[in-house]
Image (cartoon, rainbow, N blue to C red):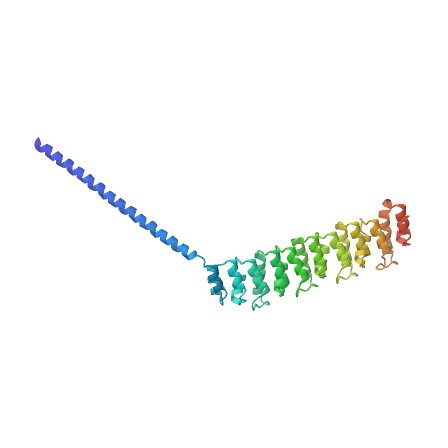
Length: 352
């Protein structure tokens, strides 16, 4: 019996020692596993820090020094990969180096000031190349420019490619357009295509009355035409064009139609109608005379300014008759007498 108890005791002791050994072994493996994971995390931290170091941008001062010495596409790419700030782009643009400016024109994040400098002081670009033309058109169209920068480019960008790119710019401001009117460069203003560019630009930029008057001052035929055809035309602008029609052919029936339609759709004050009636411009005089909304003051002004009309023409006499007839119900006796004293046949018939 005693022997049996001893055997059982030894067995239980062995089992207990085995469990204790197994527990210690698992703890060691767990500690090893945790230490190993900790090493992995440390290695990841080191890797992340290494990546951040690669993304670190070079200081502006150092990058500007390199940008000022760029002579190849690869050098330009390296500088931009390290620091593409506005100051660095400006430094690179001012080098007038072909490779530097070429890279910038195609750089997705090109800043407005760098583009302005390139347009003002371009390198030795072959502007007869369709590829170069595309570089400038794409760069100008996608780059956000301030009105002041647009004005500088329009004023100082001498080449046709730059002028064309500017007038086709989707978000061109009226400020930029005004300067393009003053400085059309080598654009052929007699070209139907160029005239369409100006008309579309007016529609997009929606110039104010003040800006429209500045455009009229340019005496640019394409822009005068664009304003006359535009829904944006202001009454004061129409009066100003009447007084200063530039090189428009006032004997052309197309021009007569432009003035006629512009007068009908534009809200004009009494003073503006009178100015159009008194202008030395047959297209303007005719437009006011046949305008359904003509006022008495404008009619009497036309009657006193008939030098541009062929008064022997039945058509012209009908113009005067119809205008007088429209106003007749609103005329005072004094006004009727004043009109009768003009002795214009058409007016007399309209008063009957």
